[in-house]
Every structure is written in structure tokens, then in C-alpha cells.
Amino acid sequence: QVRLVESGGGLVHPGESLRLSCVASGSIRTIHAMGWYRQAPGSQRELVAAFTSGTEATYAHSVKDRFTISSDNTKNTVYLQMNSLKIEDTAVYYCHADGIYVGMEYWGEGTLVTVSS
Image (cartoon, rainbow, N blue to C red; front, side):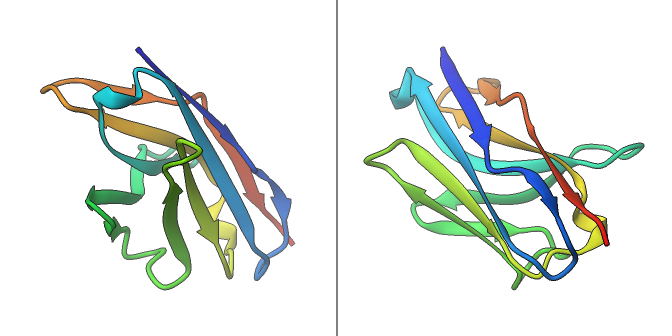
């Protein structure tokens, strides 16, 4: 089993920045790739950013050039640096891990990001 714990959410004003962290523990070796999703009220959960292979990453069009995903493998941690935040970025942000076996995936509990003027 893998446990994912997010942190770093909060209330910010438009234009400000936040950095989310996700620490993975447990069966780390069963993780293939990690990423971030978000779910706004009344909306479906959507991909924000995720590693595809090695250090390559994919981003949602709405966050490209504003958000950056990174990792520190020595700390089993994935980060999401969010700059120039917009009101529409308000959502619960979830850390996600794809396992090495088909159908294996893990989710964190989520951290709330609120962007409000």
C-alpha cells in the first residue's frame, strides 16, 4: 500500500503563489508516476499536472506556464508550484500515484486551495 499526504493549501488572492507538497510513504517501489488533480465545486476531478516518464510532465492547458510539477526523490515528495493563481484555480487538489501494475493507483485526501479577492 501507498499513502499520499498533501499539504500547502490555503487562501490566497489572485496573482499570488502557493506550493503544494505530497509525501508518499509505504510501498514506494510500486509507484510508477505521480501527479496532481483538482476538483472544483460542482465539477469533475481533472488532471492538473503529472509526470509521464522520467522528468517529462504534462499539464492541463489552463495551468500551463503558471504551474510547475517537480519532485525530490530523496524525500519521496512531489511538489506543485502554482504561480499567478486565478479565482478559477479554486479547488481541492489531490495527489495521485499510478502503480506499476495495471489498475493500481492511489489518492491522497486532498488539500483545499481557495483563490479569492
